[in-house]
Figure (tube, rainbow, N blue to C red):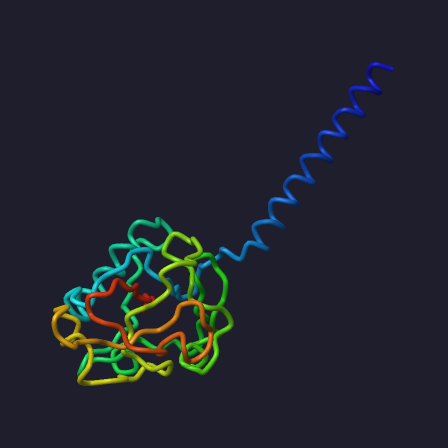
Length: 201
């Protein structure tokens, strides 16, 4: 009888262990956090006034934030932003056969073509750590949804100027939106604090 109980206990433990493994794998799969072999896009957890230093400094902000997440460290990011001469359509690496995902693994586009199309699969509202951003949703872009320059003249003097006494502004997107407004929906004074989109290259 004791032998039977011992054997039964082993069987029960085995079943529990197997179920635990299956549940863990199902949970892992459903969380969508696998970013291996994919290009990551995130919304910065930090906000910045319009004089953050220009396109090159926006890229530095993106890469510094990415480095705080072990899964993103070592990957190269550029900010989704345009000045009077620079734009993503001309300066980004375009991946036509690689999906673009958020830092939590949720897919936003099958490839570059969909990334620059009118509507994404998911809003870019997740930061570099995989956290949802649901406040201060405005994003410096001056960039159309297709990656071109929106305004060559009004861009906080190439994002190097924020004088509250003068009429100086740039155009912003809304990170809660999946459509065209994600990239351009209104103008913002240069002294305002807004976020950045970061796109892996």
